[in-house]
Amino acid sequence: MPEPPAQIVFYYDLGDPECHLAAERAVAALGGAAEWEPVLASAGFAAPDEPDLTALARRAQSLGLQPLRWPRAWPPDTRDAMLAATYAKQVGRTIAFSLAAFRQAFAGGRDLSELDTVLIAGAACEIHPAALIKATRLRSVADRLDAAVARAHRAGVDRLPGVTVDGEVFAGAGAIEAAARALSEAA
Image 1 (cartoon, rainbow, N blue to C red):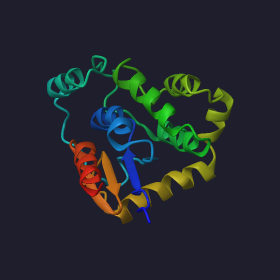
Image 2: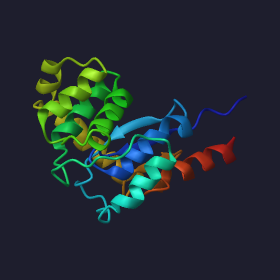
Image 3: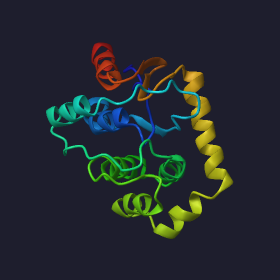
Image 4: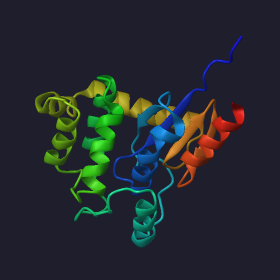
């Protein structure tokens, strides 16, 4: 009997440039079976070092991504954007919304703490603006985001980006590649 597919979860915060670079590689490296789980970096995950903007720009270029542009306000307050990502997950648009939001922030240089930026990301994946605004104010969406943070901590994720593959944790800048290697070795 064939083995069941691996359980893969990708944990990220939309305001983290390392998460942006990881997200751009996640679909190809982890396959379509990965669950994308938005979590707040400020909710007990190890604070990332001050980003080395030059190194991040070189990595983005080496990955064939659009040149990085930094939002004026740094670091951004991503709570509403992460609530929107949590809602996007509820309606089956997690990856599309998250990639659109990452690209607005890090390719467009837009501030994720501004509602317009979040609405543009929502429009890119056909989420109605009124629904997105309402979702960011619902207690049930906030509870889902809090529950996702708790699941990430229980899984052993201590910094972002984080990936779990059948309970094995990979975190930080090389998480996607390490998780992809583990999947390849298991196959």
